[in-house]
Length: 293
Image 1 (tube, rainbow, N blue to C red):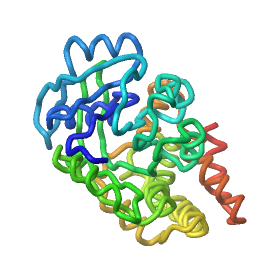
Image 2: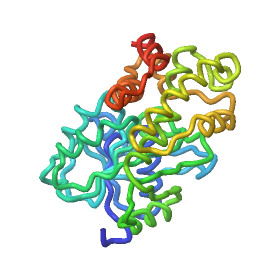
Image 3: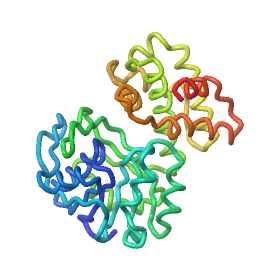
């Protein structure tokens, strides 16, 4: 990627994608948001409005369409796994060409889907640590004091792209390999999402009132992550749980309360499939997935 300000498309300008699009647009990038008719119309007319303790309150002008109609240097895929198949119809593979594709989806199975759909593109495993919500089309509430991406790039070839993202205000680290990047997030996210959703409560209550179950699930998920090639440790994961604000809730829990489809297969299902593939028992995790199915 030769340009210092790459043109970026964002597939799914919700909480995460909307914040990324707004920050990049504010930094001078051409940003094309791909969404449904109503959202695209709002973005064309009013731009993206962000309310963030970290970045302040601002509005950024972006291009918006229902389908990608121009070449871009990079594509962020920020839809949820439950709507990925439908959303990909907005991106013609021949027009996307060899662009960098960064999916910020939960789970691990989406890379296969994206590489099959965009064979000429460079699909890079990525994760993001953030709390951001779309409160209405074009309106983003960013409530975490961080927005940190990790991209799998053992050869550091994406450093110029990472620098452009950092210049827009994002935290960006380049990780060693895909398994480490994806499982570092999933090994925390799966227990967090499954337990807060199952017990309909925040992380503080989970770690206080349901600690034995939390410890069991952390042991299972860490074992699966290690078998998949990631350096995971249950004690380290527990320490991370204990550091998080007690009132923190998972996006899966919010989806359940709102009656929206759950990313149960992408999160819990991914752990169970990897456990079965590596012959790592996951009975406690399986019980949670079954209870939420």
